[in-house]
Length: 131
Length: 131
DNA sequence: CTTGACCTTCCACCAGCTGGAACCCTTATG
DNA sequence: CATAAGGGTTCCAGCTGGTGGAAGGTCAAG
Image (cartoon, rainbow over all chains, first blue to last red; front, side, top):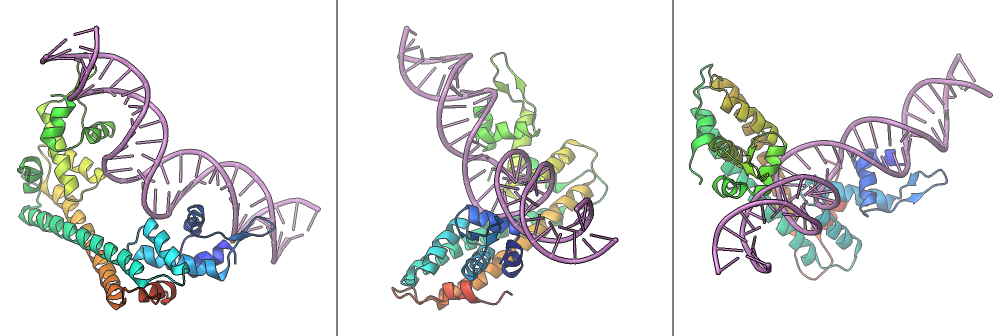
């Protein structure tokens, strides 16, 4: 398979696949003309990474997960630990965003949104106490 | 005020303040020794930006908001529009994260997390259908 | 006079790609 | 046979929003 095929089948842009080679996720062979030749294994790994990324795992998480994925004798506890940490990170992000949302929503509601200059949003940003 | 004072009062690191000068948020005067001399106005603007950033506004949003903040004749509708867009973006992010969370939480729950190699998390990442 | 806390600039780096330039390879068509 | 379209290749730069560190100037205290 050439990079275009793998891009289509994995759902990742070709640029991203080259980048993933660059950072060592895959090591495709090269044919005589210099084109990357991808094996099924490469496609699997790329698809795996694509899914992991879409679930919010970082590149370094993916590196760990890929190593565990390749290691047939790994303990599921190791994988679970990475996933749980990711879950906790996601929970933190959600909580932060919800707090932001509440504050901002309150501001938006209190703003008339007309053509007059009086604006509680700006007033608050410019003047609210440090907390 | 020197940069250290402004940093303390605005709650922003000095590095960030220099960066904000770099991107044109503020234009502090310089004293004879080359030190930045901050006016109250600069402190207000930095504090304003700090708050807006903590509510998830991008740097470009802040540029817009600062311009509106400075413009005593602005229409509150303009500010509200920016805030509402930000709110919508936050909602999208929260929804995305919640979807991630649900999938990942399901995976974590289904994984034994023991010392055996069988792991539903890796199985799913490596094998689930493209959707 | 030296120490230490400031301040300055500049350059490099983080994640995770993405865009573009400049070039090569392959295949089909006129 | 020339050429044009549509692959592929490399490398370099840039995005966001800063952060870290080196090398050096300045200032007040002891």
